[in-house]
Image 1: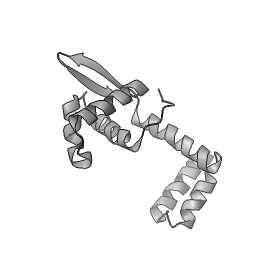
Image 2: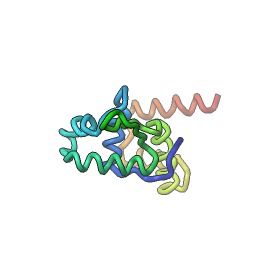
Image 3: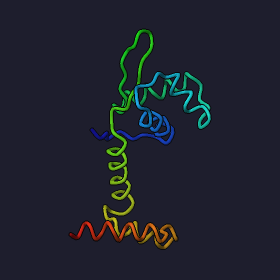
Length: 125
């Protein structure tokens, strides 16, 4: 499932924690893992988890008196959806202007170029 709901940068930080976890997490565990990066209070963590659940990108289940949270979408699916949205919005759905822009801004190094060439060869065959 890919969501059509937008995930903010702050929400994405929280999603990265859930995607990296090997099992569902409590809000306290999420807060601990975000402590150094965001320094959010528990109330903020719970609010963010609630927003993400309302958007359908996080699921939760009760475990006694606490909730266990896990991602409801895969990271790869979200990245793919956001990438398509980005290219569509800024480059009219065409990838070549994006690559050209990166090249103009010295955003591509030799390794990037080699990987793009390899991908193009694979796509042609």
